[in-house]
Length: 353
Ligand code: CP3
Image (tube, rainbow, N blue to C red):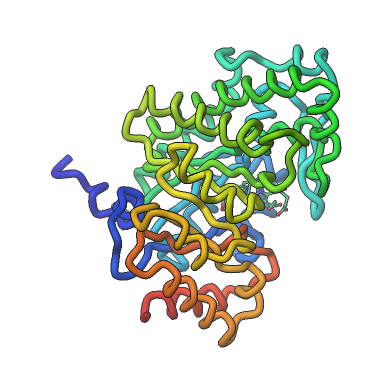
């Protein structure tokens, strides 16, 4: 290789703390049902999980939003629930509804899971890792490739509830009835997922994002956010960096409030905090050191609405983060009803600002 091409990746420069004249941009769920070309590939894939485990198709859909919009980052097309699937739990997706798992309710269910170092786990995830490697060689040099996984609490809550119930009653109930069992499950996920992130980074991912989508709903306790979310995440980050010392890591603590976002920056060792749409980004920036890297925050519904409200929302993100390292993104995933033209309008506003 001549020189280090990764130095030209704008998103990596921001993750290292650089302030760019225009923030690099990508959007969560950028390969998804709002894109006609995604729906076409999805229709020929069979099930959603088949799409995740077929490198040819997973590469194809990952690249679709890059070709159409030229985002600064490309996120691996997969799902946080391939990990429980690899551990041996039954996982499937119900069309139009979402994920279903055979719920893990007791110690016997836990004992059926594979160990973190069982070769069968990584045999199962092999096609995902292959997809990462192929993506890095097919993407433009300037595009950052992001890998990802779910945070242990978020993944555990699907494993226990069998689906994403709004109040996560099953996993919170287990935390009261048998906290030691929940702790063992979280620890298993820390171990298997730190290995999984290391494998993605070694295969060519430039950085990884940890999705704590359920940080807003946690069990009772003195410090539930610290105990069930931030501590396991920080352990995962330490384990990843023990293998890949310069690993760049973004943590998205959705629903954890202003304080949760500040604590994610202070306590996990993440390089950047993904900010959900419920947080006042300008207020958050006053509570973070100016060197802290933020990402996200634009409300997905404003992107659905479009028009001048969208222009104002783009401007507000830029104003809130002026002079600070920031990655432009939404405050949660793009929804299927979003018009493609609104994504174009958002990027035009951003790039001409
Ligand atoms: O961002 C990307 O473009 C990369 C792909 C990606 C998917 N899921 C594809 C997907 C990523 C990063 C995820 C993460 C994920 N998966 C999370 C964390 C982010 C978040 O949204 O909070 C969670 C909680 C899941 C679990 C999951 N997968 C749910 C709850 C659903 C159903 C909701 C829905 O939108 O249908 C999925 C399905 C899913 N994952 C789809 C996609 C594109 C839609 C399924 C389809 O195309 O049929």
